[in-house]
Length: 87
Image (cartoon, rainbow, N blue to C red; front, side, top):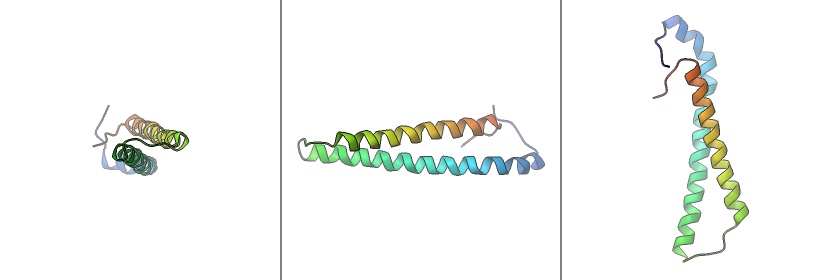
């Protein structure tokens, strides 16, 4: 649950919050990169009328995407546990 902080409380919380926010940014970039790769593969398949797809490459890309989603969820949960609200 979000709460209100005094200036002193907020400044004290910043060292804990900053690495979590950097993690959110990194995980978001990883998710967007994996999503872009999947979209690109799907478009190539559709444009060529079907093609052989490297199942291993697709599985690796999906795993990267899933890992990023789990990382995002964990970081957001930690931020919320501190009483902060992401907007």
